[in-house]
Every structure is written in structure tokens, then in C-alpha cells.
Length: 110
Length: 126
Image 1: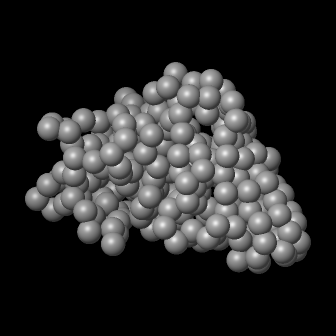
Image 2 (image 1 turned 45 degrees about the vertical axis):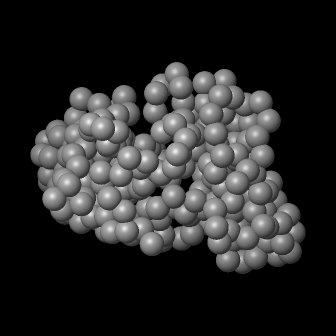
Image 3 (image 1 turned 30 degrees about the vertical axis):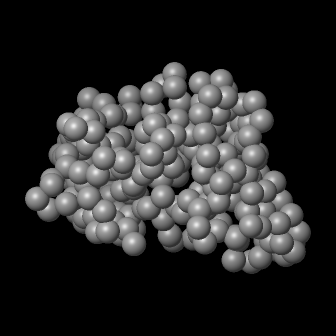
């Protein structure tokens, strides 16, 4: 059971938009920055968004992040088949004193 | 460009020690702005942070509660790498293990994992 809660799966058609939620609590999302990671099949996770809404260099602006209270959201517009994979949120939990992750959301672009 | 190259055995017997190494290129294990982490992933536990080592005038380590009594993360400045040792393993420790860097000028707990190793599947079985 992950500390952060994500929907297990989502699907959308190419070109559409999807939003993936990440629900936590005060000691984690409510107090610390959220990051999002993309894991394509057979590869290591890749940083997609950090500090709630900042894209690293090279990440297209189709990807966006936001945080409100104890929840965070990853948005992906203009979906492409290459976006299929797992998406994870992560943050520091000040109560547990460790990094916590969501259980991951499997995105299907069909 | 930072690269992390993992090495270590893919099969460990129950009750033995799992040992993995992460070789760093393009950065230094002694960096004053980075922390060097181990994270594992399994179908049953998802992504699980195990711990980190970092240098801020002296060496520090932090560990997840779940592995605190069994895990040791050591830096090696002469080889510019860091390692994970996990003792008394059980089949529950079967997972893909990743090393990852967190780097930046903000407090450590705010830093995302910006570079990852390729992953090592470690199976605990007799």
C-alpha cells in the first residue's frame, strides 16, 4: 500500500489530454515538493516534473504539473503512442523522514 | 552528462548479503550539492526508496525504516562510486534495484531524482 494514491490505469486517444492525480497528506504533498516520473516499458524512471510544476530541460511543454493542498496532478496534452507507460509521483514525507512514491498509473494511448 | 552504471550479481541466496555498486561519471560522489540514492521496484511494493549517502563537509547516510537495520550505503571516493549492501535477504527483497542522483542547491529533501542507473534485477532464491 503506497503512501501516495494514484489511479492504477488511465487511457485516452492520441491527441487527447489526460490528467493523472496523486493524493497524499499534510506531511508529504502538503508540505514538500512533488516530482513526477515517466517509466517507459523496460526502462528506468525518468524525471518529468519537479518542484510541483517545473519541467527539466528537454521535456516538452505537453507535460505540466500542479499541486493544490495535499494533492498533485500531472497533465499530458496532445497524447502520443510513445507516451504509453507508467507514471509515478514522489515526494519527501516529513513524518516518515523518507521519500515516498505513488503506486503508479499505467497510461494507455489507444 | 551524468551517467550512472550499476553492477552486481542478479541472484542472491536467502540469508545472504545483496551487494550492488553504482559507478558515477560526469559528477563526483563527494559533490556538496548531490545525494546518491538507492531505490528498488517490485510488483508487490512498487517504487521504494531505500536510502542515500551524501557529503556536506562530512559523510551522512539516511535509510528507509523498512531496511534501516539491514542496509548500508557506502561511498568510495577513490573509485567515484557508491554501493548498497543489504543483509539477511529474503525472497521479499527480489526487485529491480536502481541507483539515482538527487542534486541541487535547495535542501536535500526537496531534490528530485534527475539521473538514474539502468537498473539491476536481483532475485533472491536458493
